[in-house]
Image 1 (spheres, rainbow, N blue to C red):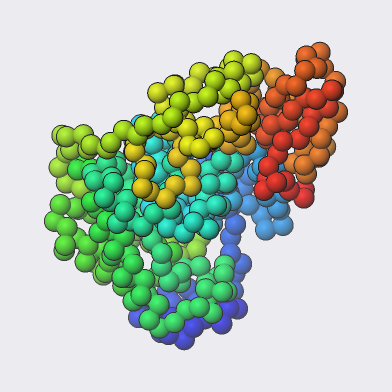
Image 2 (cartoon, rainbow, N blue to C red):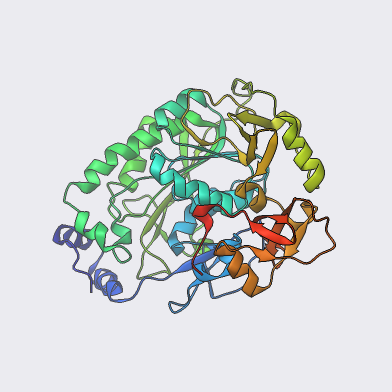
Length: 443
């Protein structure tokens, strides 16, 4: 059993009654459950374990399996995620066409989940103030085939200056003391101190303050943490509502989701307890901004250099996909499809949209993100690999290729079971592997 911090144990005694507290402590003897969520951009839920009550596309998988070693994982068909972490995006539940902000997004699980709800329509801005953490965020979005996301690495204050009353939905999965993850991560136990929750509250209030400025009237905001104490959860909500009379709490459907009500009289919020549900500790609250927005927020359109002809030549020769020209932007030598052509100048940007590739010396080199965002039918030259050859491809190997395809240099979309894995270039009867170094795996 994990050696829990004494101050944490004492605080939990104050939150739970005797029998409930005993059951809670006993839950730390049990192993943490592992979950995966099917990517709704590429597939539909197809079994694989016990369904997670609050996320119908999520499943518990057995501890003796290694889904990250499967080809389907590398094809972006599912995302491995702690079960409770699937709850906030399901409560937010954006719809296609919405403008959505995931303000503390890394490593990207909740952003991928949101993108599944959007189905390629609208815009998702996935933000994390840490540039280093955003690298995992970018890769997870690209693997999932998300084509309508912009990735920023900004402080909430800077975003609020650029996007006043812009978003229909905002997810604030706030930095927290992490008490709910003690069973999964002993480093969090070691880093826990008596004043850790109080320090986190300051950050949480600040993030919520700026998030409120960016939400449209009538819009929805989900605040979530993976911690148990009330000061980071119910107390933060009470403080926020005291200072924002234009917001109201919307009651979560606890029975439908299979979660518990909140504490301190806030029955409308939700809690996941490890001794009551199939997941770690989590808190979720749903807020709505009162009124309706009648004036479209003004965001300056950006200007972009003209996209080189090499890109359009590539599309003509190798794709069957019609990119809307008004959404194409060029940054340096890189071509992006920006879901909304908004002015991103002055912001720290990791990805300004769907990264399509790079124009260099008059030629266009397609990106891994382009491959993962396409369907097999949208490329002119494709190949479905066997299981053995798919593993060889993911290891970075080149492959023999016998076909009636023109032997001139052709870009081929490499697939497994009709799902893209990346690009290869056909050169004299061989598929020259174009998988980026960071995507090569040791399957």
